Length: 274
Image (cartoon, rainbow, N blue to C red; front, side):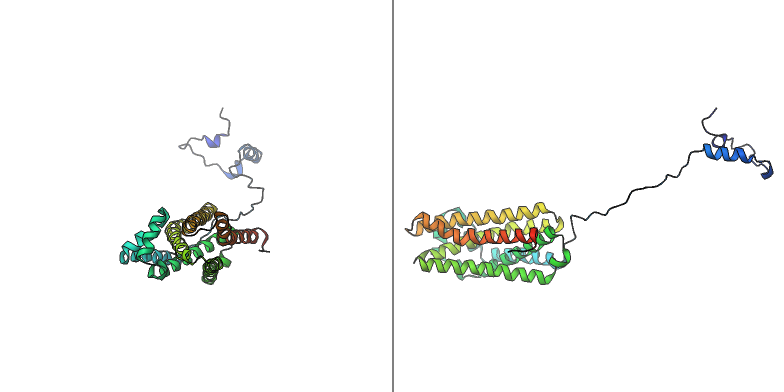
């Protein structure tokens, strides 16, 4: 005998028509009670929505800006191939810096102006997207006005470092080292620009914290590289003690970066920078 009533095993060719008045009501109810229900009782818990950890932070002008920066690099490489190659070889040693300064001054060239502008734009864009990812606030940080505010801040930071460099060199009467220091900073800035473009592109399409911390690590590595090269160039060009040179670069490099990192960390963790 089948485990369920014959209604599930009836012969399809048999005549199942039965007058309504001959149906046994008790057997019908018994049959209905024996048939398992095909409809579940439903979900008894409550659904709690979770906040998405990734956001759509891409805007149309972001790709246009990255394309403009790539075009800037290509145009400078085509117009000034030798100068472009010499600037990139400055981190290779003091001999490359000496050769470059004998032929031309990078601080008085179109390369310096254009690449400094590109460096400011890419750093501001990276900081903006990092703020969006870390704060999860797209409306507050992803706008055009916030980008220009960050551009102003990065410009002020670059200008402050430039003025501090000239002030310290005036204070210690080491004017011969200004061109060397600016050449080193200019070269590292170009390398940072070239590396940050693909990283920002990855951050835009994959807004996760991994790429944010990777970008900050690259910026920290660039600052450390600039510090070491600056100490080497200054030690060769002057007779100042290495201890004073180290203190000088701590004031110029480490203190501003540490201040910015501390202020950013307090802002996202406590909501204030003080």
